Length: 420
Image (cartoon, rainbow, N blue to C red; front, side, top):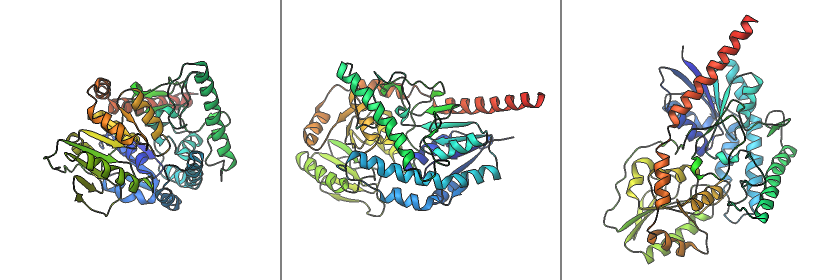
């Protein structure tokens, strides 16, 4: 009998693509895989050969996430609140669809994206073991909140001074207070809630699969359920190799994702200034939007997008927003980065990448100076060490091991109940 696994994720590319990559580890002769997510993901999921159960109520919120792009200089708490309220609305609407799917065909195990609360809530309600998968593993509570660095506060770094420890204490109170405040605006707290009593619904009590590198972390985590699997770079819809012009001294990839509605044009102007200053460098700027096509303007090549895995080795440097996928891609391929974060955990990844020597965290004022530092810096030995550590991980083996552990534990519990 195949092990039946349901993957549940909010229909946002960085979240659903991580789960697709995890699902790709599973032999279809041994596992039956179904995705429960927004209806607009149906064609992609079925094209990959997986079963699909739609969350019909997710249609509007998929459009919400698509259109809720932000300005880099928007008031940061407003950014977080705007996305948070939309996510809670989607999760509240999604619960009955997830529930209906598992009642129709009950899985042996569920794998729930860390922000997709309704997946874990349904699993708990029906006694199904589940795994929480996350690439942003620093969203977990640390062992010691007085000394460890809070997350989602625009990229704090370690500070062992008395003021630094006070900052950490205050920061953790802000983070936990914000989650509690989320309950006040929750449209349906029974179906989408950060907490049930003292239990944080974001995390599985059975297994929290950390799909990132502990080498970049500041904190140790208190949850006994945490298992470090190793970095996941994100599933790529295409493995097309796109040959780039070779008559340039260096080639630089520039991408800032699709979340910002203003910075695409602003980044274009920044790149034009760099291109004028460095005429021997080729700048490949991917907008993240489909339909504009490919065209060249001097030594700038504009593209809708480029598949990362087959094409990363062509680049010498990457300027990016420090989203989890591109962050780990640069470490995987040992390419120095310049981070230009826009929102959310991008600041935390920028902080960690800069602190651990994988790249340089820049801003508007330092952009050109930091780029000069990027292309002239000789010592990237810390990035070399991270690159080596990256390839020592084996997320496939860890994931499959955890699946069998949880399924077997559930079987043993069933046998004990039958004997009793």
